[in-house]
Amino acid sequence: MSALVVHVEGIGLWSPGWSDFQALCAQPAGSTACADATGRPPALTLPATERRRASSSVLLAVEVAAQAVAMSGRDPTTLACVFASAHGDLLTTDYLCATLARAPDELSPTRFHHSVHNAPAGYWTIASGCHAPSSAVCAGPATAGAGLLEAATLTCAEQCPVLLVCSDIRGHGPLGEIAGCRHDFGWALVLSPQAGPRSRARLMLGLLDAASTSPSPINACTGDTPDNPSAAALPLLTALVDGHGELILPAATALGLHIRMERPL
Image (cartoon, rainbow, N blue to C red; front, side):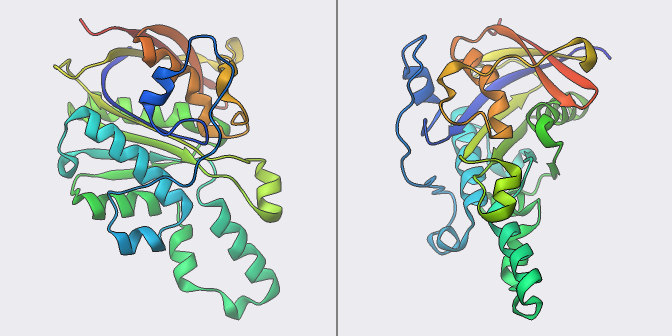
């Protein structure tokens, strides 16, 4: 496969440790301490009524999407989207499983509506007025790399900017125990096929045999987030602070995504 070359124009980030990418940039180099957890993602792109109804997974995805788009200066109504999540809405799925086991007739159609994997994409496109194509990606523990590969491929193939959102929320109940995901973590990038005045980094992506590679270690300052599949992208986000670096993310069971990052020309 020839290398995919894309340019990063916007970055979004929300977790118990960081409210946005600027917070990660402000953290002292080499620090292993993260800020304390604070509230829920504001997700102000959503109307107040929808914000109250929306699930935690939707709030997280919409928040990081809005941050990345704002940094890029792009029009959200024209941005194609890729939404990636390893577990989807763990809280709602746990509720559905428990209700089906206990009293199936009490299952809420509204809660089922929130459980589908592309629910965050739906909320984002409606709230932002986006009419461009959108898709939802899941690849288990390799979801972060698979999402980036999907978004970069779309950017290069269609020669258009693409919004990538990758997020997972903490679990609850028996399903939460199985998933082992105990903290929220979401990030987003706006990718462009050409360099522009808002380009922050150039990414050159290539595929590797996963058998001959190992994932880049997660930065020590991740605190309690390593259990979150979306946090596998933290080495990428940390490298974006300086705009250069080289790392590998799993993109599938048998594929690694080699990423070389340079400052824009």
